[in-house]
Image (cartoon, rainbow over all chains, first blue to last red):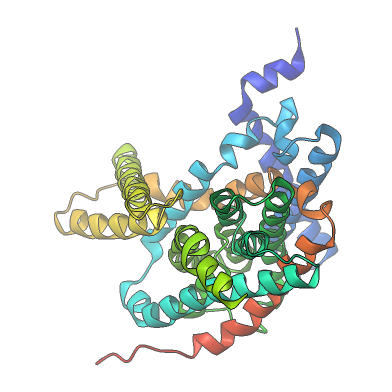
Length: 251
Length: 121
């Protein structure tokens, strides 16, 4: 009997067990070694990222540790279906008055978040010697999220290595948001629903915002997710059209 | 019954995501527009209505609460299945662009948080 294929067959249940062990280790590190200075959930997410790096290194695949047969259930449990389902379930804690009060700030930060990300991406692209509008727009789009980058790149006919760069940029953004949000949260006053909605609109990367807020304060997650959920869709709408044309007009 | 709560959550999720997909198709983008947001709104509105009708009984909320408690474990699984290798082995550009935008974003949060909608309360 092949043990690995047994665990692969029961992938989802296996991943529940492994995640429980990861959470346990993270809690222990947090309480015993760090005296709760860094929350257990933040350490667990960091451990997850290390596993992802290790998995990518030994398999060469795209799905981190989930490309190993033993961890194949992570594809499902860590996929967008479960993630979005859990985000939706947190909505019961949302307060409508607070949401409406933060609505204007949320919308403004969403609009500005899209523009600022695109411009920053283009500036970095220029600094690295890219000259054509298609490549620059693709890199700018990747600075929004790792979905907007390839969508824009393929719409504009950018080369595959530029598209890969744009995906990588989006993934770096998600990871940096995940790791640093709990560390800077108090400094940027990210401790209330209002600020969380602004934060979600500015950052946009749903996986980063969700993970970063979860590690900061779980109550803030639905507010951040509420604005972030519009970011990728609007980015896919604006980058290959309005933003690209504006860039082309400027060059 | 627990399953009714779960059923309401599933309904809200599916309806919201479907609407987000249709909206994305209508405006001609290959992505879901606001699906999660619409699902969240729907869940809150329906749950309020159910409460008024007194249909929310016993373990109804547990069917939803379980999933909001599963949130961090799911995020851990998600981060473990990211393409972390691609992120850090693709030269300097992604690291510079990806880090710079986050620093700028962090700096803008307190600035934008001061925008408040005036209400008559």
